[in-house]
Each structure stands twice: as C-alpha cells, then as structure tokens.
Image 1 (spheres, helix red, strand yellow):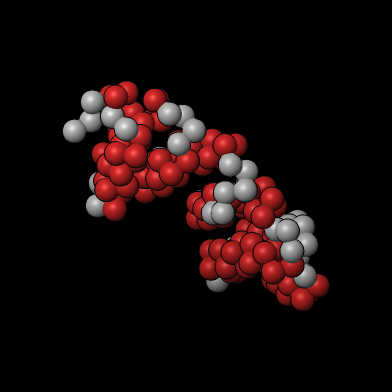
Image 2 (image 1 turned 90 degrees about the horizontal axis):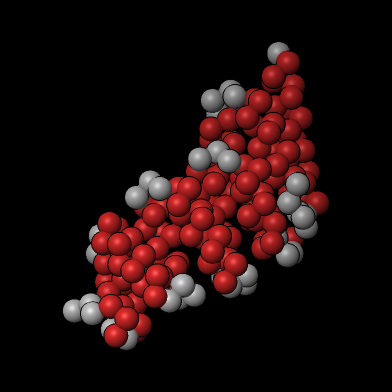
Length: 168
C-alpha cells in the first residue's frame, strides 16, 4: 500500500523495482514519477524510470531522465553508456559521441565506444551502400578521445573505402 509521503522510501523503491521486473513499464513510470516528486535524488528509481521511458518509446523523456541521473551522479557506472546506446539505435551518432566522451578515459573504453558506432554504420550504412551515413559515422567515431592507433587505422580504412565507393 502506498500512502504518500508517509510510506518509507525503501518500500516505494521496491514497488518500482517490482513493476520494472514485471516489465509493466506504464506502472513503473507512474510510480517512479510519484517517488521522484517526493525524493528527486533517488538514483535507483531515476535509473529505472529512464529505462521504462525508453522501453515505452519515449526517447526524449528517457534522455531527459538519464541526463538528470548523470547530473545527480556523474560517475554512474552505466548511465552514459545506456544513453549512447539509445542514441546510436536512432542514428544520432554525434549525440552518442558526446555521451561516450566522458567514459572514453582509456584506449579500451574509447575503442569500445568507437566499435559501438562502427557496428551501427556498418549495418545501416556500409551494408546498405549508404556511404554518406557510413562516412558520417566513421568520422564521429574517430572524434572520441583516446581511440587507439589500431582502431584509428581500422576506421581510416572504412572511411577511405566509403569515400571511394561513394565516388564510383
């Protein structure tokens, strides 16, 4: 039973978690909004809220929620990665680079981010012979800081091949 402000936050958080685990996203969203109105800095609920919004095809709302989560906890272990994944899925590659940049602290992290972008442009650009999209994506991936020389070489190859193919 939810009695508003007198209900302990742990109980409310558990209700949100239960709705989320049942994939009842409408209830997760509704309950999360109630909890966040009472306790706006509740990180677990904010995270579940963002996911539920995303799973409900409300990307702009999900991005706003994940941005609030990042503002509350800049070093959140998965928030930037989830945001980048959502953006890549809708081909917002420059926005994805911006989301990946704070977590591209070393070559491995940067290469993983570049691979995420490259996989998207390979599937929806190169394989579909949309070379302009491929070029845009490869250039975006190369903008990530700390990309290794091996990854840069790979991206340069696909960039050059796409430019060549586009001119044919």
